[in-house]
Image (cartoon, rainbow, N blue to C red; front, side, top):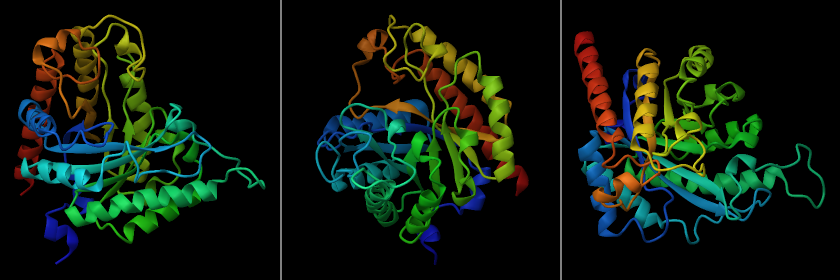
Length: 337
């Protein structure tokens, strides 16, 4: 029996028929927060209120700054291995399929997309080879946990824009991961970068961050579709979402945008995103951003201006859309049998 059969994981080829009605849970993975009772209740509420069939369990590990070459994933504030295993087991107990998504961040607050080094090694300067050696240790550590726990998919990177050009190193990393993890592998490229990754053939699933303006979805989907068709891989948005804040539908990736809380702004963005993607059967779903391990009180929802849609107007939009798409997927699979 293969490992995929043992854990009930889908063969990567069969993922072409999968619909990912998903939500990202747990960010940023601060040590100690995943073992609290609130964390279990949060994940239970996510499954019950949204009707998801997948979750991306996501957490961050830190390097000191964008030119640092050591990722300190065993240290605080990163969640412990036992917390990671516990979150996976909890999701599995709820009947959810799991993408494990370890992410590197910079301690000084610089966005990970700016991690970068000289293309040619220079003595006494930080080097790509040193960084990828540390990053490989980081990803392989969690790849082993993903294999041990029967995790359904592994995401090997998130929005690493300046690293995307390092094709040789990414291909080697993927080969190393396949030596310890037998499930499907994806990489989460950043928005607008889908056509900048030359090594999509090396992964099983293409995924990206769908933080597109409310009035620009059609143009961006037109741009992405030829890439997905060319590589012949399943595609979904590993991240997508919008803060419940005035102005955010036009810059949904800007979590620091100033604006008054607005449930309606968030709801309008989801209506537009789902309507545009609904007409594109090659878009196989979302791991929406995001559902924290500790939820705010429902009565505080109207004043919360973050991405989470718990108890907001967008929540039933997500739930109803996912229910519709999962019904359609089930009906299609039944017709093919």
